[in-house]
Image 1 (cartoon, rainbow, N blue to C red):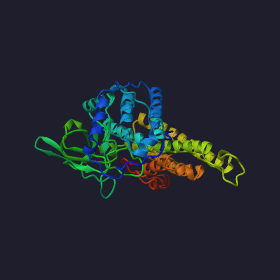
Image 2 (image 1 turned 60 degrees about the vertical axis):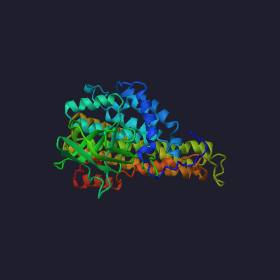
Image 3 (image 1 turned 90 degrees about the vertical axis):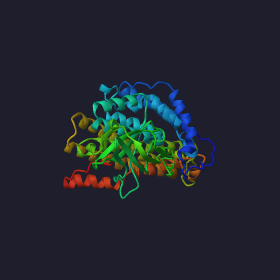
Length: 429
């Protein structure tokens, strides 16, 4: 872990940074990407896991420093792009590794333990690919998948300010021979780093669709104004679209992924749960490291080292047991998702998938909050010093787990078992 001395928090946190103010940094990043190594070809699940393990070591190295100074992870995103991991869910017929959902979950856990900011970015990328897999034509799939296999990253521009999280005001309208995209997104995670932005919008017929727009298309503005207390370097800021011309061949249905039984929602939520587990795992490791190397024993404990305190030992045991249970549940649910996917999803099996994923979402959310809180309780007051920046784990856990309310997961599970009511189908179920 990086233990460098504390430097003053970057003054851009909490302030709007227009695209022009980071254009020089972006230019350097894009030049590096163009001159970088060729994208690796991932062969199978084992190769994907091994590659993710190597990448996790790299992105963990300066994670604390990036958070402290809000230094955006351009180099790490470049490494992700070159690793070949962005294309692991693409079917073999299109040149991808077609790894299992279980393997994808394991990859996300590793990346989240290293830096959940970076893990959040491919999570949205994989959802955009899922929508294309479900609703795209062969020609559309070939184009996008070829782009991804070259290392191209897909960002997402989904949620907007509105009455609820599912409300979309962005419109794709026909004007003469052109399709024009207009609107503003409040959350556009990864858009600052990406090559393509998958934009959730509504067409002239009132249908929800996903339009793939080049990141630097005329009329696209990405603003680095994300000021959340956690997940500081996801670049989850605003994206504006002003009369952006959209190629009709880059438009696919979004609503069909949820009107028809599919695993788009459950897999998206599953990956969120995996990120939560990764955050918890990192916090537990940090707690054990601090207790072993820096924490002082309590005066009444009668022991010379904090790691010998019986109460601390018991709490660490409890956290490890909960983590073991959460990870085992994630693997079990991942295998169930793989089975459902292989058999072609139905109304009933998708309902089972959503309920199963709701269970692991509860387990990992509560563990992430518990573990990041216990990190300080076990380590003592000195662990709150800015030089260690351990609060990033709590801030990341608290921010990430607010994507959708976990209280509703209890309702989904209870209503399913008590009243045989299937969950609604959308991106958050």
